[in-house]
Image (cartoon, rainbow over all chains, first blue to last red; front, side, top):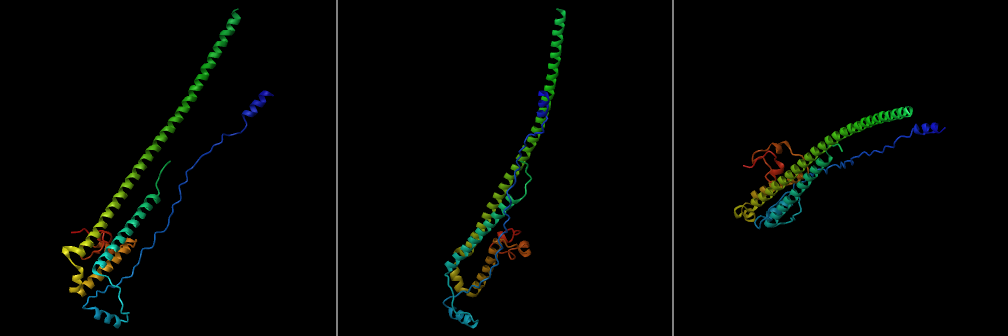
Length: 112
Length: 156
């Protein structure tokens, strides 16, 4: 009886529990890049003390309100430089975004 | 007397043979485990080598990306310096020039403004046109931002 019990318990089909882990990579963010800007061209008008009257007259003839927002030559220079700085920053940020996307969202064959 | 001695001898021999057999079995089992371990180690070494190669590639990519970004920052700085030069080259006074040659300075300003507008579009991700890509001469380039608008232009 004892022998039979021993044989039966030894042959019981209990298997070793196997727990395995599989690393699941984080999903890519995949946000679309912002649409590139499409800007309007604007017209600069230079007014001096000599041509001011003529400029305003022309504006009226063209049906445009005879009013202008003015900048001195120095302010115009600063505006141009400010825009160039903004443009540079935009380019750097945009390229940085591309580099991050390229680095983190390009599939890499890695065995862990 | 001899009978019990014989039995003892036989018992010792059987025990000895059984022991040797078990020892051989153990050796065989150890050998199998060692073989399996060897395979696992070889596979681990291969995986580690692959990981090291992949890390090396990552470092190279990081270095290349840093270098590209540094190059971009320096060419953009040059564009800004060039703009400053256009305003102040040889003590140039744009205000006085505009008084003296109002119409031509107005034309130049509007031309430059249109180019600068295009520069912002490019900086925001707008694709380059074929004309911009193929520009190699000074007369063909976007003088406001050649570094980003005309990749094939080499300043001369």
